[in-house]
Amino acid sequence: MSKLAFDRGEDLPEGQLAQIRHRAAYVRSLVGQLEAAPRLEPELYGSYDDWYLQALEDGLFRRVFVVEAREWRRHAEDLLRDQLTRNGIDSAWWDGLREAAEGGSEVARLRRALAEGLDVELPAETWERLEELVAVADTIGEGTRAAREALQERYAHYFSDLDAFGDGDPSGRLTLNAEHAERAFGAVEVFWRALPYRMAGEGAA
Image (tube, one colour):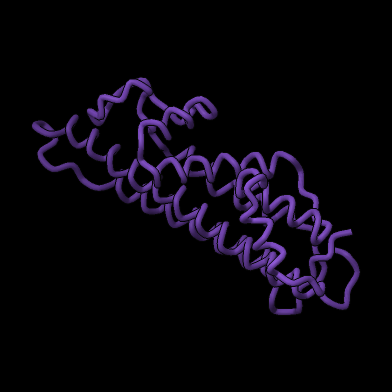
């Protein structure tokens, strides 16, 4: 049985879900405003402005992946440390597991820590979606052709054959859109929604 427990007023999963949904709604609003903005000199720059809008939105969606991966890492690790301590386990145990050479990806390490330290088991799909989120975010952060090629082998649906921005990259263009952004928000939302926990003093939720 999961050992996760929170005191009243400190329901971390519910708080995270509210913030994720707010960020997703805010991004949708921003995109809507960008797309609704009046075109200047449409007869002369109509197609150019369409391209430029795509470039601006691509940049916004890239930040979505970077921010959502960062926020998930930070809050998931805070959750782990807090709950280990609550259960009488020195959080340095997590430090050792996180830094172990044979530990696998950071997502795999956190999955192992939750399972071994706190008896938390989540569906495999939850971890697969987080692996995807982190892989895209890390590729954006690294910004190299090798990283993009490795990502394309795993997640080809993030790539377009069109070199819309003139990068000259034979691996194809990492092109993010609103649907991809929804996948990013969904990956972190499903993690927090899937966590089994109880409020202190109550039965399992």
